[in-house]
Each structure stands twice: as C-alpha cells, then as structure tokens.
Amino acid sequence: MFYSIAFHLLAAVIWVGGMFFAYNALRPAAAQVLEPPLRLELWVQVFRRFFVWVWLSIGVILATGYWMLFSYFGGFASAGTHIHIMHGGGWLMVIIYLHVYFSPYRRLKQAVIIQDYPLAGAQLNQIRQLVGLNTLIGLLVITVASAGRYL
Ligand code: HEM
Image 1 (cartoon, protein in one colour):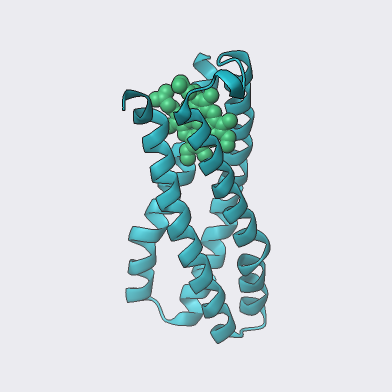
Image 2 (cartoon, rainbow, N blue to C red):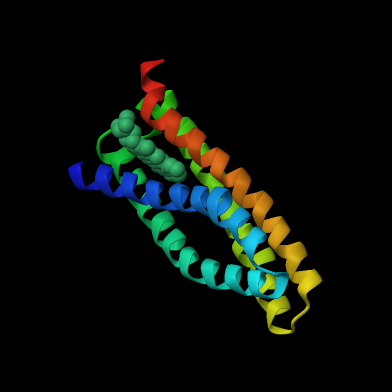
C-alpha cells in the first residue's frame, strides 16, 4: 500500500499540477510575450514533453488505483463513495485527454508544420478549453479523493 498510494498521488500531482501551471501561468505569459507563430511552436514543444508525463501518469494512476481497490478495499462493492467518484472522475479525465491527444493536438502539430497558423490557433484554443476543464475535474477529484471520506 505504501508504494501504490505514493505513486498514485505523485502521478496525480504531476498530471493535475502540470495542467494547472500550463493553464494559469504559461498560457497567459506566452500570449503576452510571443507572437502567434512562435507561441504555437512553443506549445507544440511543451505538449510534446508534457504529454509523455501524462501518459506515464495515467498508466501509474490506473495500475495503482485498481491494485489498491481490489487488494485493499475489497473491490467496487465495498469501496467508499469517494472512491467511486474518483473512479468516474478519473476516467472522464482520461477520455478528455485521449480526445485532446488524438484530435486537436494531432491537428495542431500538422498545422504548425504547414505553417497554417489560423488553423493551429483554433486547435490550441480547443486544447485550452479541454485542459481547463480537465484541470477543474482533476482538482475536484483530488479534493473528493482525499477529503471526501470526512464529509
Ligand atoms: C481512475 C481510476 C482510479 C482508481 C481505481 C483509484 C483508486 C484509488 C484508491 C483505491 C485510493 C485509496 C483510497 C483511500 O485511501 O481511501 C485512491 C486514493 C487517491 N486517489 Fe485515486 N483512483 C483513480 C484515479 C484517480 C485520479 C485520476 C486522481 C487525481 C487526479 C486520484 C487521486 C487520488 C488521491 C489524491 C488519493 C489519496 C487519498 C488519500 O489517501 O488521502 N485518483 N485512489
């Protein structure tokens, strides 16, 4: 349990903290300082690196989460409400991330390669909205997962 909860938490912190930083600090700073071509190129490079950590985090969160659920909490039937909410919220986050990765992010990369900056800007805008949504869900899931049992 020591290792599974530790890695589960670290993965959640890396994923949600990374999105929070990107959305609330890097995004407004990049918009203020960089013109579109450079800003869009910056985001492609940022996502290229950050998404490796997100894939890793998702793998760790799911593996440790289900391991704890079935080896310590006796499966879904005997798990508390906070675990059910975390499970549902976690999968919603994964689905939103998969959509971002395989749809607007893929199109953003292609648009930047062919230097179609209006198209790239539209993709980045979609990613911004979805990452904003996933950050909110992530913060909520963390709150429910950690504090939910005391309600
Ligand atoms: C999607 C599948 C997931 C499963 C099956 C799962 C399962 C679990 C289980 C069994 C625990 C231990 C609960 C307890 O000690 O009462 C736990 C703890 C936790 N999980 Fe998850 N989880 C999942 C996703 C997530 C996600 C996506 C996040 C955050 C974004 C998250 C954040 C946390 C946190 C913060 C704790 C620590 C609670 C505490 O001990 O204070 N989990 N998870």
